[in-house]
Image (cartoon, rainbow, N blue to C red):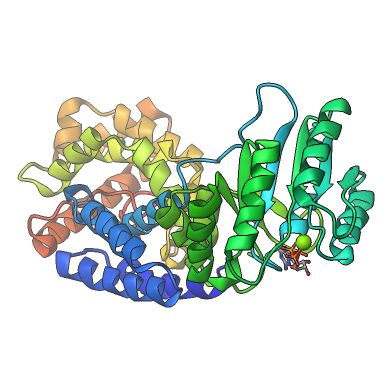
Length: 452
Ligand SMILES: Nc1nc2c(ncn2[C@@H]2O[C@H](COP(=O)(O)OP(=O)(O)OP(=O)(O)O)[C@@H](O)[C@H]2O)c(=O)[nH]1
Ligand SMILES: [Mg+2]
């Protein structure tokens, strides 16, 4: 699913992710690349343009340019906006106030209507909704048989019309049968055509009228890209749709259909077909689909957690301390460390930071117990000592060691690391000019568990 798109987006975004500092031209250049990839994947032009507008606006925002690992944040923004393209949340089916709820499956020939009807029925059976299938594609004997076979396979009854019969009458009878049989859901399979034509639309309109469906789902083949979008528009104008079932997402669908169909038609993708088997139907989840496209869930998760752990105010304060006119003190060191701790188990977190795996960080430094020790040592200092560690002579160090229950050697080591970090902060300040950079995330943080 989305393999090609996924790979190309990864390459496009890699350039942004690898940079520690991003400027506006770099972001614009990177997003131009993303644009090219989306258009190549057959995403609708207008959808692409609006999408990039939103991404760029957010990416150029203060918060990203000034943040640590801005490239990672852009990955997250792209991810979120991709999800937004496909929907707000997980869409649900509309249920009838009194059963049966009727779901009408429509679409072009071979798009996967019959298969999807059976898959949906299986899903409903699993949810104990006692479904009934209706075979209203009466143009080919094989079509009726196909649904009957699938019905037997999944243990769902099929109300079938006779070959050559009237689909409208069959649909009406099926609805009656569903009510009489106390079926909660009726799923109606219909005939397809090679292209949208007035005769098919007229028949569907009459079937629709006969069963008053809560849902009219267009079954569209994801492999056809923007063609699927055009088909959806055509069906919506002719009979009115409530949602889309995007099939054959397991194939090498380029992404154009999935990413454009909602933006263009305003109809949500409700299900995605991911195989030929009767279980291969997923409820569409925009977040998950975006995750499949941008296979960087680790980055997205990390940025989310970091954002949750470090409040903006804290970030501003730390950046000010680290790079502003003030001095970076042991108190700040402790605050930064606690924030890093709040983000979760360190080893796990480190794995999430691209490049961090390459840093040689002794396991002991990542040990949460060691963090406790560092904390104990710093808290055993007086406020004056924390502000000005230069006054820490031998006797003071001995007192701190005793107070914290740690050996003097460890106190010394911590102070040495802190000094290195102060130096690093100063260098970085010189290097980066006025740009803020928050310690703790990817940017290197000597003397702490993230140190180089
Ligand atoms: N790989 C894959 N194949 C699918 C999927 N959905 C349907 N198919 C296959 O697509 C072919 C057509 O599916 P049908 O369900 O018969 O399509 P239809 O829309 O009912 O076709 P007509 O009744 O002829 O209009 C079958 O071989 C299905 O197995 C899917 O999500 N993934
Ligand atoms: Mg069929």
